[in-house]
Structures are given as C-alpha cells and as structure tokens.
Length: 509
Image (cartoon, rainbow, N blue to C red; front, side):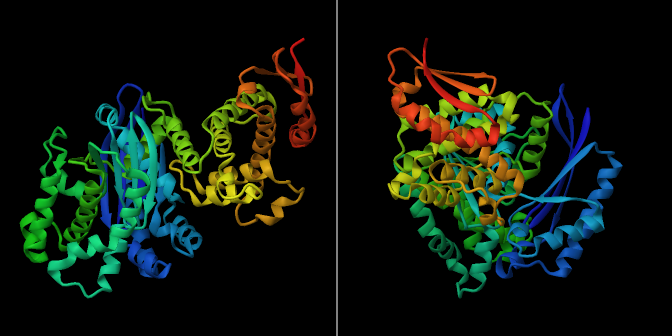
C-alpha cells in the first residue's frame, strides 16, 4: 500500500487530498483540505498574481506540506490550472513557491486539466460506464472556462472549450450596470453567442440524456443533501430552475443565510447554475448527475493508472483518437484513407520498435498525425502543409498537452513540406530538442506510411519486415508497385537520415 497526495491550485480554491493506493482496495481517500484563494480574478484581468496572493499561496502550501509529512506520503503531484496558466510571470511565481514551500507545481494545459477531470468522473466506473451507454455530456465548469465533452455509444465524440468560466463571468458582470433582478438574464446574454455556436456545430440533433456536472459550486450544494452512502446525486432540471428562481427572488444575504452558503459562494453557485441550465437546454438534457469529484480525484486516478494499481475498464487512448477522427470528419477527411495510413503507420512503428525505442504514448501521437494527415486539403490543395499545421494548432484535443499538439502539427506539416536541417532554429519558442527529434522520427514513419497507402486498397495487402538496415515493404502478387517504388526513394530519405534504415518496396516472390 502507498500513500499519495494530490494538490489542485485552482483559480478560486486550493485543495489537498490524501489517498491510500493499493491493488486490493484501489483508491481510498483518507483526508482532504480546502482553502479559498482567489487567484483567478487578478490573473484573468491583469495577467499577474499580486505578491500578497503569492504569500497566501505559500502559507497554504506550507500547511499542506505539514499535513503530507504527517501522513508520510510516498509520492505527490501538484498542479496549477488556468489562473497560473494565464499569468505572464508564472515561471517566477512557481520558482518562488517551490523555494519557500518545497512543493513543485506543474502547470496543466486546458486539455490536460479537462482530461484529468474526465478521469475523475471515470473513476466512478460503474455509474459512468452505464451513463455513457446513451448520449451524455460532461459539463466541466471552471473559473476561467467551461469544457463540454459529448459521448455517444460509449465513445467521446467531441469536446470543446469556451471562455465562460464562473470567475471570468463574475468579473465581467462587475463592470456592467446590471440590476439585481436581471443577473440571470445578463449571464444568459453573455454566454448566448458561444453556446449557440456550439449547438449549431456540435450538438445539432443530439438529445443528451444525462449531463454530468464537474464543478466546485453545484457539487458543493449537492454534497449538503447527499446521503452518507453517496446517493441522491441526480438533480432534475426543475430542481436547478427552482434554485435559480429562489436566488433571483431574494437578496444575496437572505438566500445565503437560508441555504447556509457564504455570499461569495452563493454568487459563484448561481452563475454556474445559470450556465449549466443553458447548456442543458441546448442539449435537451432533463437530468444532471453530480458525482462530486474534483481534479484531485483525477490526479490520484492517473497515478493509480500509471502505477498499475487500478484495472482500467475504459479506453482513454481511444477517446483521444475518437476526438482526432471527429476533427478529420469536420475537415472532410477521407475515412478510408485515414484508416489505411493509421493502420500502416502502426505496422511500421511496431516493426521498427528495436530501432526507434519509442513507447505507446508516442505511437498514439503518430496515429493522431496519421488521422489528421489530410485536414489541410479542406482549406488549400496547394498549401496543405501550412493549413494542416494551423488547423491542428487551433484545435484543442482533450488529453493532449500543448507540446504534444505542437509535435503532431509539425509531423503533419513536414510530412508534406521539406524539413530543413536547421528547422529547429525556426521554432525555438515551441519545441525543445527532444520534441524536435521525436517529431522527426514520427515524420519519417508517416512519410513512408503515406507512400505505401497511395490507395487504401493497396494497404490491405502489404507486410513489413526489418532485415539488417532495410525495411522491406512487400505487396501481394496482384499489386502494381511502380508508383510506390518511384516515390519511395525520395519519401524515405528522412527515415534513412533519422534511423539509418532504407525503405525498400518489393513484390511477393
């Protein structure tokens, strides 16, 4: 058994959770601490965190550190989210925090943060797997933004982020002259444009049966009424309407006193409730499931997953690939061609394992690049490399870090464009040398795979074998290989440069 600590440095609240992790009992939460600390308002408005807030942050983390020592934890992970992510001097802040508290905080990209939130929901395995058998959506409400992830037939089909976070809306409302009785209408008007665009592009005729709510606001309200065994965590749309009406018809002081919530907490819960209600309306959802999970649960779940303590019943890698396929469909990609290049890329990757020494995560990045290989054609037939790069860099895919998205975007770009020897000099702000070398390896494999798949049908009758310093690509007797042989010499030059392997096309003897 191990003891693990998860720390979430959020935009409005900090949380520490201590878990026992074992193969027999899985994850078991044994303690938790919360502290309110509004880092987001200053960060979103000015791009900086005041020295007073940094001091308070260090005081709270020092207390967290003392608690962790008392439990003699084996390992910990601390993450900062949007408030720190959007701070101009985040590196300085994090360095100061580590020196003063001994706690190292890593910054999550939005897609990484939402993926961990998603995993925290998936940790409720039986309930979650049952719900996503039918159309469902995870509505992840944060301080800076919200993320809506749509599921259909047990698959993640789309995920989108909108800058409609609770703190961001509260800050915007504070600059408006809104009468107390019109706050709900003002929030709806503020969010209407983005939510309507989301409805037209992604929801269309989908009727979501259950909206899964992940937030710090509605969840806290439901926690007060949940039974000790965790029951009564389903909320109807009518219940949400009743809460919104009650708060709208009373003063904040009166409503907070009756509901036993701080006035600040009530305002945040109200904003979250109005936004969630709008989302339920556009998705036609009639009920909400509020599992009461947090980012800390997702952090612990990922730790248990990596240490192989938990037996995972849901395929998260397939979710990332499903998102990539949705992006490909959006840009009119050929399903037959992307499947052929995906399958061929994996075959080459597996054949060359002893040479490239890459792992399963790198194989997933290669597969995403293969799936998105032709997305640039949607904008320009002549300049597809640059267009593909821009599309991928502008499209957030849940579960990918920013650096991984850069690797994929450049892999697709340089599959179609010439890779100069000193190309690294042109991307110092995006790629370090390790990422650059990985991108070259993936590009070398993708170039050969695409050349093999001049037509999807040919890719069905081809095999690969590594012999000495040659990758032997063998087609069936009935296949003509003159085009592939002609193109391969040029297209495989990067493979020779990177791996020292020559790709050779031949027929079955």
